[in-house]
Length: 51
Image 1 (cartoon, rainbow, N blue to C red):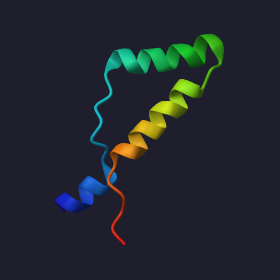
Image 2 (image 1 turned 90 degrees about the vertical axis):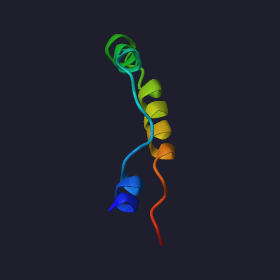
Image 3 (image 1 turned 135 degrees about the vertical axis):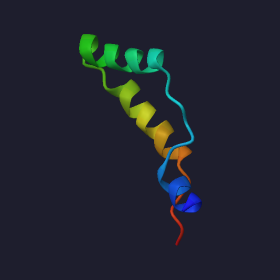
């Protein structure tokens, strides 16, 4: 079970100020790049699935 959870749950902890900054860029500037960058960080923090 632990290995299964490790494959699907990010190790990254996102803090509120970071979420607000990402949302602010979208809401005020229609700039989705900070959101896409955050998604890449989340994806890279999850262990790859076992073969």
